[in-house]
Length: 494
Ligand code: FAD
Image (cartoon, rainbow, N blue to C red; front, side, top):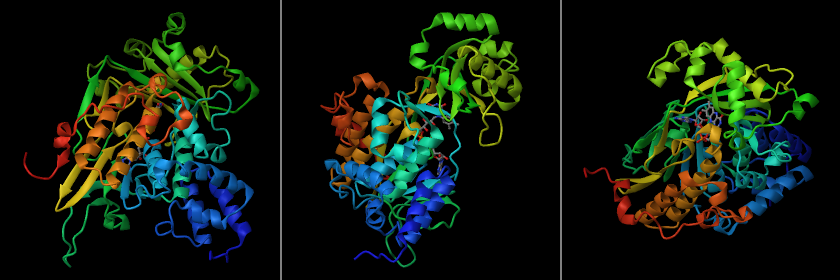
């Protein structure tokens, strides 16, 4: 018998608060209040967690979401949440890709512990979504949490809204999320003072956080472009100098603003006349520009160095890009003026006011980033073995493959890698040999940089964690088990 001693209407209020929470902190707080009220302990309750919540919270608003999650959870690959039920996974980072991986693993019944070093989601910048990501997020109930999600033909979302939606789904599935906890390093298996054999653990900050006692079988680096997990060599792709500027302006949602047309990157890159006119009239020289109307008016553009020097944005010319774009060498006011002028010209002066939205530091949200060097990890996964304990280690998202923002490939390829990693963990959980698991993962990873919506399977409604539902050519494997031997680290000298 379920315990029904809690008043239902208060539970509904707490649930509503959780669904409409607009910050990471508020979502975490209202969820823990809801669980407390329903007398549920997320670390010990049945998984996925929303099932015991559902039994205690039966009203129309919640029911719409339960129906979505039930439909999703019925995918046969999840084996009714038993496909990974013996596995404990740690995920480093609550960016979109860490959260998406957490969601997939929870549907398969894994215990998922997610660490995030911050407790705010603050990035206004906007991500382009491929059709399958929109379908995927709708299936996870995105619209229930964020009513404006992909309304009409809109195919983008701000990074912070995406994190917020996925955080809520993850919490409902039972992911144990620890904010303000930073992963520091792996701790190898050992014996404790009572001669108990311990498995793989980790060192975190704050040092004595209970999660440092956790033993786990899988760890996933989803901590963005500066991956902190050792053992992954990075390939560098050095292209010609590419300086991207992002800018966010306040969206007051007026009729005049609503009328202004967005600029989708791909269509615009080739419109040479526009760029010539822009250069002649303003001195601004761009290679491309994208404009999305979201919570903010978001612009991302690739600017040529000479025009940044001429417009006084960059003060001194240096061959080294780090020096070139260093704080002391950039005039922030000139950068704001440059971004504002480019935004104004490219929208035909139709945006009535171009007031900057504020970033996390309370400053106008404009920034410059260097895309001259892009990084990708050489491998997607490895196995570490010490004293009879195996640990599967893998990367997802920007840690695995850094995206070039103006092309809008980042989060879609990030989600694909999240699903591919979850598939690998599923095989691992079901006892497949480590070399077979790694060979399949590396074969799929080789497909990722070339993947576009056009060369994937056409029926996105059939996409699942199984890669054959998403990629066209998954067999035969392009990487053999013999080729991944070096990815099993036994701690012995080679
Ligand atoms: P991220 O979104 O980078 O998330 C990584 C998470 O890990 C962060 O929340 C971080 O706090 C956490 N973390 C890091 N180290 C640790 C640790 N040791 N312990 C615990 N937690 C840790 N893409 C675009 O397409 N367009 C843009 O305009 C754009 N703007 C961006 C602006 C910024 C400032 C950044 C950082 C990224 C931007 N991106 C943009 C990239 C885009 O955000 C990513 O491609 C997308 O979010 C998927 O990334 P992810 O989940 O792999 O990593």
